[in-house]
View (cartoon, rainbow, N blue to C red):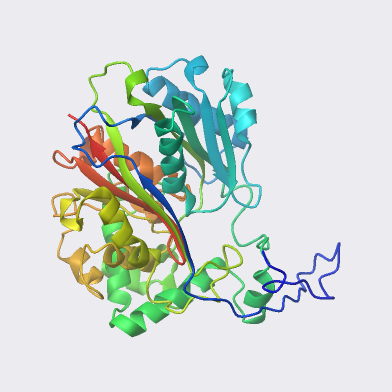
Length: 429
C-alpha cells in the first residue's frame, strides 16, 4: 500500500496495545473495484467440458462449547468430506482454508493429522466471512488449471468458546476510527448499514423480522441448528434492541464447529450414484475496499451490499439470470444483509425483500427457497462454509425433511458490505 494512502502516526507506538492509533488518510479514487474472473465453462453444463466439481462434504456438530480443539474439529470435517467423496487421504493433493484473528489452524497441521500425501497446492487465507465461496472458486480454478486434482477446503473455529469477533482489534487499523465514533462492536457497525438501507428503501423492523422468522422456520426442522426454538413475528418484535435496528435474533449465532468440501477434477472422481455438483461460475468483488473487516470509510452507499455491484458480472459469467436459480444460500450474518443480498442479486426489486419473504417465495415450496438450513442466523455462524455445504446437500438431494423439490441450480454468496464472493453451482445429470 502506498505510503501516501496510509502512514502510521507518532502515537502508533510499537508495543502499545491500548488501541490509540493515528492513521492520516489521503483521499483515493473511491470507484476502485478489485475482482477476479472465475468463469469455468460457457458450454452446456452436462458436457464433458466441466472440470471442477464438488465431490464431497463434511461437517461436525455445532455447539456453544465443543470441549475440543479446533484441529480436532477440522480433521473430523475434512475426513468426512474425503470419505464422502470416495477418496483415500493420500489422493488429496491440495488444501485451503481461512481464518480471522488467528482463530483456526493451518492447513499443514490438518494435512499432517490426516496423513495426506504430497500437496501441490496449499492456501491459508487471512479473511472473514467473505471467503467461503471465494475459497471454493479458487480451488475450482486450481483444479481447472491442472495444479491439483482434489482440493479440500475447510473452515474450523471455536467461535463461541474461543476467539470471538469483536474482541480483537482489526489488523488493518480501522479500530481507532470505529472506536472514536462509538462503534465498539460488530453489530453496531452493520447496524449503520441496515439503518441506511431502511431509510433509503422504506423497509422497517417488520421486514427484518420476516427474514428472521423465515430462517427460524427452516432451523426448527434442522437437527444441526443451534437456534431451533419457535419464533413468530410477535415474539421477535417483543425482544429488546441490542443496537438499533437489531435485536439479538437479527444477529448470527456464534458457534464452535467445522465444515469442509472437496473440489475435484471430474475425470478423477469415481462414478457415484449421487449427482455431481459443478462449479459453473463465480465472482469475488471488493467494491471501494477499505482498511480491514471493520472498515467502510470509503463506501459511498451504505444501503447496498457488494451483491448489487457483483451481480452483473456473476450473471454474465454464468450465462444465467436470477430466474434460472432454483435455490439461494445467501450470507446472513445479520438480517439486514440478507435483505440487501436478495435485492442485490436481482431476486426481487429494491426495497421489496421483506414483502418477497412474507409472500412465502423463500419458503420450501416457494419460487426461491432461501437459506434452507436456517442460515447463519439460526443454524450457526461457521463464517459461511456451512452455507456452501447446504447448497451441495440440496443439489445432491440429501437434505431430508428440508429437501427442495428437484433443484438443479444454486447461488451461494459470502459477505455483506463492501467485499464478498459468490458462486453458481449446478447439478450434473
